[in-house]
Amino acid sequence: MARLGKPQRHSMRTDFGTSSRALAVSQEATKLSLAFARPPLPSSEDCRKLCESIQNAVLAEVSAYYWLPKDQGITLRKMVRDTIVDVVEGMAQLAEVIVRARPQCISHEYLISTGSIWETCDQVSHLPKDNKAAALLMLASYLRVVKDALEEMEQAQGDSGDPYSDILEDDELGSRGNRDTYWSEEDQQLLAPCVGLMKASKACLKKVRSSVETHGKTVVADQIAQLDDIVDISNEISPSCILLETMSGFSCLEGIEAGDERKRPEYLSPICYLLVDELALSMYPPLNRMAVRLNAAKLASVLKKVLEITKASHVCPHEEENWIQFLSSAIDHNMNKIKNLTQGEL
Image 1 (cartoon, rainbow, N blue to C red):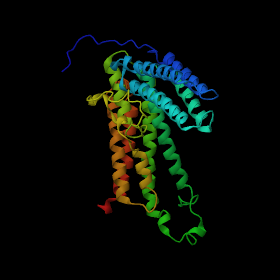
Image 2: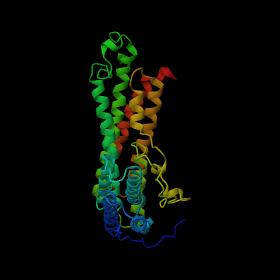
Image 3: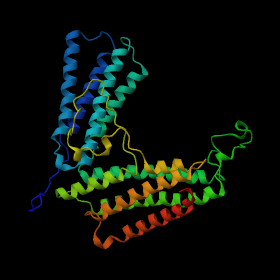
Image 4: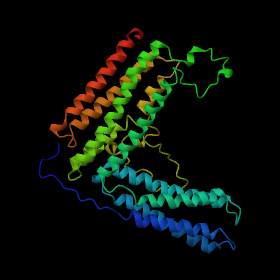
């Protein structure tokens, strides 16, 4: 148990050298591109010096990640890490393109790789400055994905019970005689509370993000950790980025946080599946009612956990807890309807 005492206050530096080091990487990418863009080709000694200069710039950028204190928050460190990985992978890709290309032959891929490094290095200067800003960005990305899934399902429902109308033409299936591609009246009754649950997901993320924006703080360690917990559980509603472990020869970030489970949340898994999408996919015909029930139950459980963790954190003052109860009731209401409509499947 942690010893009680005066809370440790955190002073967040707005830049741990990432911006200036990213600029150096961008400049090295430009030098590399120009060196092989026109004759004569650089000599072996020039290539050695160029590679050494690139390596130093890349390693300096990577070191900026290690200088970011762990107590500044998992969410912030993840975003810094992912951006730096993109910089490293971009440089590796450019080097690979140059090796494959014919001398003095500037291909479209060559230009794209160089421009990609410039763009990624520029993104480094726009990294969030603290864990609250990082949490807001992550929650906003989750919310966008849920909005897209909801809009897609509402559009499909608006197509006269035919979600495949824009994909399958009548002449492809003999006047669409297969009713498995349509929703029945019973199916549409079940869809209503499912869409209601998806709307509750959207409202939940929107309200949680608003609370973090209004009340979120990064003054003491507990506040920073609570923001991480909110982002972590919300990630189960929406997907994180796919993490590719292949870095084309650059392995300088390999093993970050190894052995520290608290520092390795779900964003380090290959893919975090989207619960809202799982529910939405199971809602398309031919509708499997038991699958819909199970996916809805999983989503409802995570949503209740999001509300529980948010309520227990500093971003939800006691006097503002009413929205927690309202959304919790909405989740229960829709889930109970889904259970009633699928009772015969048990």
